[in-house]
Length: 263
Image (cartoon, rainbow, N blue to C red; front, side, top):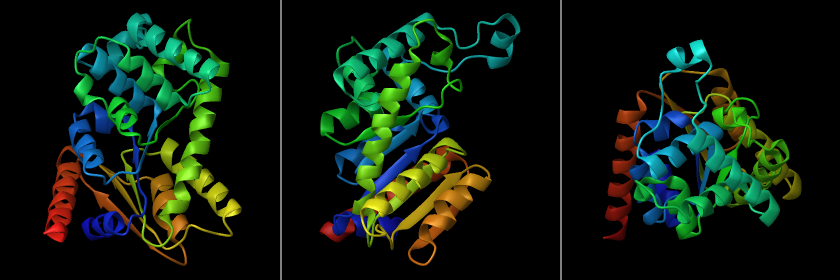
């Protein structure tokens, strides 16, 4: 994978990184931000959970809660600041014609932040790198909040779906797709976005590399990321291990390979 990513950077092909919430929750955002700064990542796509963790870490300096305890009395996921702030940003995004990722980044940019330097959403926005958020209505805590606007969630997330599809043609002949820790949402979204890209580009992109990196094996990442998109051309890999170990190792390997190639 290291060589494939380094070659994609050298040949100016797309490197699309898809995220699940655990990647952000475990503190790996600085590594992805470093790769953005180095010009490695060309598109970041995340599920709603990753966006929530990113928003909370940036604004408040902490994320996560005791789900079991909160579920007993109905307080799980009911944080007022997170629910109201994110839903307001998403509603503003619908009114302004932004995608969900851009809307959340703009909202963070306008706030006094606890850890703004750790936000993937904000870092991507500042660098002009597409960062899209792909919601699953009812699966995310902010949808429980009274301020949740289903029309806004659908509008902004659908706009981001189109943005992801528009980024995929640059994978052709040498690009890379990494799925980091999303077992369901991003593999499903990626497969449909790839279908659109190929429908509009005479069957392209082809001949790219995909990799699913997760703590355990799941059906959708294996089939929708590793196998189907690379059938007949390209290569797909599965790397199994804890994110806190495997993502740093992959990042350091890529940085070393790029630095060697530039010397």
